[in-house]
Length: 348
Image (cartoon, rainbow, N blue to C red):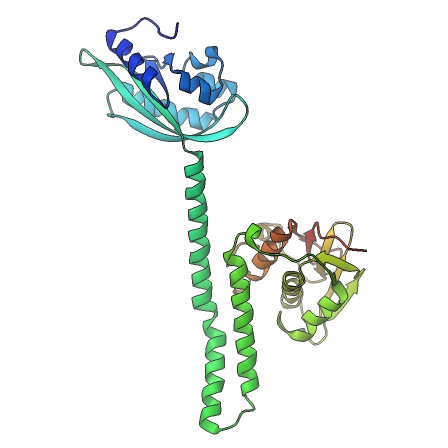
């Protein structure tokens, strides 16, 4: 039998619960589950002795609910039983009998008899898909907000430079300075390309599987100047260059950003080493490095230790994820900064 002795009002609640399409149950005044419907059995996969027990203590004891989840539920149920709330709604994470994790929305409604609260009806609904959609929408909105801020703020400087040189050429009739305007426009184009990568989820970024010559890629990054100016006494060393499997455009952007980062933060005369080993493609310098506390947030969009755009390492991490790699930040053999695209493999 599913029911337990109690007031007629609880018996009536059991009839209603049994007819519901959602998982539902009845609690008595001591928070014992005295009745559950078949839908709750089907959804949870819990044993009968778990279903008919002190709630939520037994679920916490069995590991189906986290202790903080149980505490939230207990507080809500107690408010309903104390007639301090007409009903309570909670969104709870739980583990099912088969080990799957879901999110449920639970509504607790009081059962009244003779002017007193004698129990609670609980109705649960699986809202996992809805919650994930909401989370994804929130993540998308956050990315768009950061992207809008980046474009509106960081594009202004090169745009102003380009406009200034064009205006100067119009006023003087001299075109020599238009080269600087062209450089500024190239920088804008690069920033837009980076922003487009950041706007997409890694799985939506299209990648080409090609053999990329790491030595040629590093040399092109250095000569182009797209990724920062090389200090006069800096040294770029390509170690174990072999061809690497990856998307040529995205890999150039990732390695280029890492080289530029090394030049920017490696000191007055850094030696920057680029290569591929049994773990992946790496870029390392012999500069001052970074405190461990700063590394965790360094790949967050908009985070830069020196007031820069804060997009460089975020791009590298996104490129790595698009290839199925990971970005690992650590200390180089010389005590400087080292970034590794873990999972990138040589083709030879």
